[in-house]
Length: 70
Image 1 (cartoon, rainbow, N blue to C red):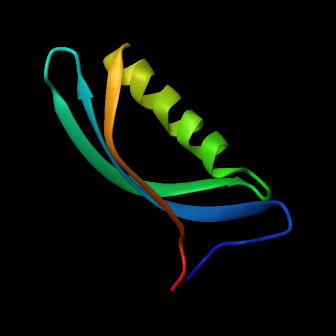
Image 2: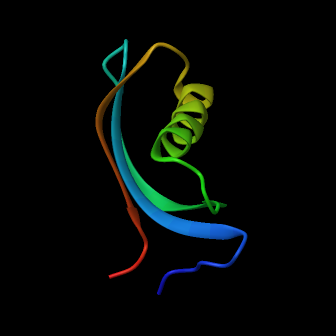
């Protein structure tokens, strides 16, 4: 069930990235952001976390973001 309040909205994401050393990582998860966040803001938030973990540069091979509801 979607968690959505006047302040936040929950999304499910799937992303695959590759580092310049060839390390591949695919992950999924839930992202709860302030209502009104754009797709670009969500992407940049997640990409920032991945860059902190793997370092830059990093290539995004796949990115999907959908509201966590059916």
